[in-house]
Amino acid sequence: MSVSRINRIILTGALLSLGALASGCSSIDRLSQIGEKPKLTEIENPTTQPGYKPVQMPMPKPEQASYNANSLWRNGSRAFFKDQRAARIGDLLTVTVNITDKANIANETQRSRSNKEDSGITDFIGSKTMGLQAQKVLPGRILTADSTASSDGKGSVNRQEALQTNVAAVVTQVLPNGNLVVEGKQEIRVNFEIRELIVAGIVRPEDIQSDNTIDSSKIAQARIAYGGRGQITDVQQPRYGQQVMDVLLPF
Image: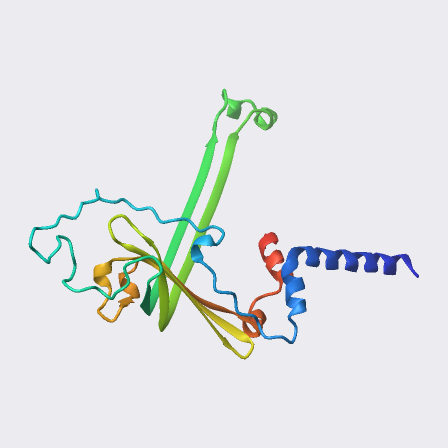
């Protein structure tokens, strides 16, 4: 076996090892799922997930409820009868996601600059009267420099997105002023592709409709994610090696 062939085998092994390290456990999991449908994630408590942090917002001073003698009405109550809308931790409400986004932007920037520097002495201590040999030795033009720079940049954005769906969310926290922190996740599997919809944010109880629904536009600090995973998404993504080269290559 020639030395060049041995070197090629060693290089191939090194590249394979590097690819395995780059992909990590993700590649092993994907290899174990070949021919199998992607598994749905288990239903879990959002407050126990890694990275979960309770929401802290500026709050007014709490007001104590007062009761009037011989009265059925309590100060601060939103309704005379019991409210069936979500109000406590663990209650459910339906979030109506209705997003229509359209943007069309075009920008162009042009810049040009030209500099020229020229300095010298036309007659250094009477060099013109000293003959040709003296003119060769004595300085004439001391410094001559010029530079030219120009740039032309263009950019455009043409985006149009629409998302309309519903997702049930659970109240995970009640803030001191009564606002609700909600979070909902929905997974739908069709053949070998899973679609995920995640909604989280802060809602006012007053914005919840009588049918226990709320529009996504009324959610403060809204976090809405819609995506998927599976065979189709896997094909659309570039390979790990290509992603690494895109990050490392300077060109």
